[in-house]
Image (cartoon, rainbow, N blue to C red; front, side):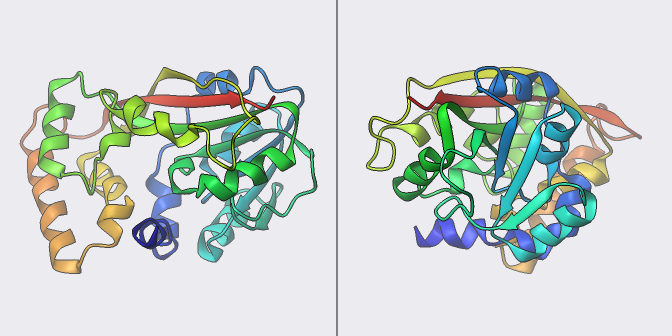
Length: 257
């Protein structure tokens, strides 16, 4: 728990870089996450700088965002001034009972203490509402992505970050617990193609916003990023100009009973 809190609280110091470099989410994945929801009222929980909120707005959802980190919340409000954005956490959601039709979490569900957050999420969800976690994952079926994973180390590209391992790494997040018993149905997982235009420098900047990198001592982080930069500079796919980073958006969803 202490290590999870240390990692999850690391993003505020990099809020501006997070907003600039983190990818959005595949619209088709967000649509799938929401297809069982009984209405348009969506809570973006652990909303960060609003990457998922922006996609939800583009799809016409009625969005409220909740984020615990003040710096991330400030960035969200700057980027999406029309979105109602509130301070709060998954364990203490500042919304009334049955007030939303879906709760979505973009690259955030793994930070929640589901023993507490499960009951809170169930409380704010309308009957038949959906809970879904989304993760942007790299397609490590491609050789250079698999090699990048090896070079980068788990602080930059962990088990939730690749196609080959994200399902196993996230499946137990919604295993019945005191917060989830008798509240949610069977979980489903699916992946949807996505991509992001990057350069070697901007991909390094993206990986630098990962929690494991943010909590490193400065010399260790610079050494790790230097190794990633050298690798990208020597690969024909990434050495010159822009390229499309091959990704997918993975979705884990359950429905409130």
